[in-house]
Length: 180
Ligand code: S3P
Figure 1: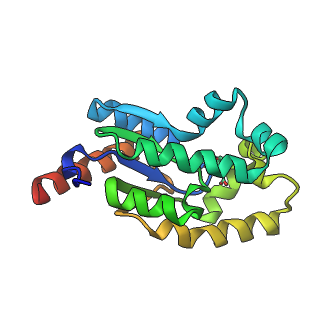
Figure 2: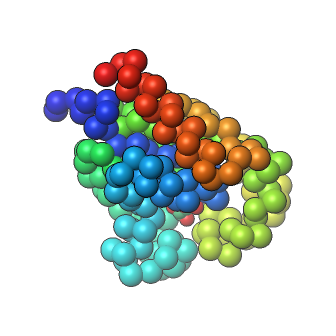
Figure 3: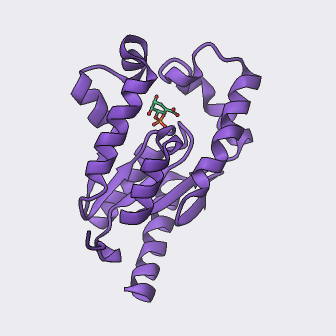
């Protein structure tokens, strides 16, 4: 398999649910004149139902299988901006394929800031269902190591969407200049 040149690699955004991967991804795509792909949305279209219903009807394993299939296909496409679901990097195969074919940004948000968003997420995110605050904090902490597989980290605390998107675009341009 030929390596995709750095400038043409798709940009992948990872991070815990609700950190802003979709909104920031859309902004980055617009700034770079690229197509934006939201993996959850692709899965949702395939099943004609949101992740929460897929989890309930078919189980998490089925969701994860489709997530892996779709990401493996999308990563080989050039010049996209792709946002992954927060649990995608639980699968080592997804980590490996993204690391080999794309440029990965980890959108980092501290627990203190994240917990203020919980009200917006609790109903729609299947992995939060039935968990109390301590269990959610545990999940947050347990997930952090999987996001360490990235090419660049962006701390998003107190940052506007545009600021984060600009930071990502600027650092990409610098990397393209330095390493192309
Ligand atoms: C999940 C996160 C969700 C979605 C699914 C599972 C997870 O995506 O893929 O509900 O396991 O963290 P977001 O990160 O966009 O919320």
